[in-house]
Image (tube, rainbow, N blue to C red):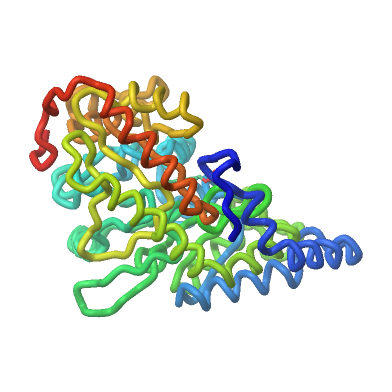
Length: 395
Ligand SMILES: *Cc1c(COP(=O)(O)O)cnc(C)c1O
């Protein structure tokens, strides 16, 4: 690749990525436009089969977006109003939103301070007689501790819905010695193909994964207005489908997914090396049980410097984002008496310290040097006060 230090640095560079696959995408789009087969059809079927093959699962069911996918999963499991669903508060809002829409009760478990992933021990503490499901989120590109979570679920007879919107393609080493792909271990897995996800289309898209043929049938039915035979509706459903143009893009990008994960890991390694041992920066900690596909590269910034660093970066042409500034139990729409300020101390601390740097498949050495230089120059300019907390302790 040519030197592109003058190219604007973006959180995600979808145009650069498109240019690498442009001939294939343009040809596929032209073919679909000439066929006028826009909904369903061979592109969607082909994509579902190819993604099942890539992930090693029995069934992939495409749908309209990742939020729908979680809602449809919970509908297919036949949960009833008042049933409790244990999930994380340090994530995107989608899970708790659909839990609320279905009249279910979200119950939040805290996360691990090192990996930001849901803490199995806290899941265990939050189980009540009303608990019916656990929704772990494979956050930022690495996987929740599925070995521990599946053991808890088996012990208590709970469903597990893996929200895999951020770690598609990541592999998990299970306690039985097998290696499985994220999203294929729980009762159901879900994902999103939002453009900026690791496997993103050029609009909205999502999918569900399961190894249970009966459940897969019910999921297909729910996606299609609760109907198996046209105009006969046996169960309550929704309208949630992937279109052929999106499926065509996804088939092309799926062939590059492993290479995309390597590109992201290369950028992550450059960041790791630049920030190793820094007094105020904690680089992402890898879990022992899964690989990392770096949907985000997220630092913890100690000493109250997160917002100052973010401003400094923006002034130096480096975008940076806070994922996520407010944990879900403190959001107005989801605050409950059962869980308030102070109840999820790790999630609350992370919300104040995390900062995600640009992470995508097109970052070159010049851009990475500019970004890391801008980060380090912030700390060169401030008074070298000690960090206010010890990263390795639970706050
Ligand atoms: C993006 C995302 C979703 C929602 O996906 P959409 O396709 O935007 O509906 C759900 N969960 C997580 C963790 C996500 O990152």
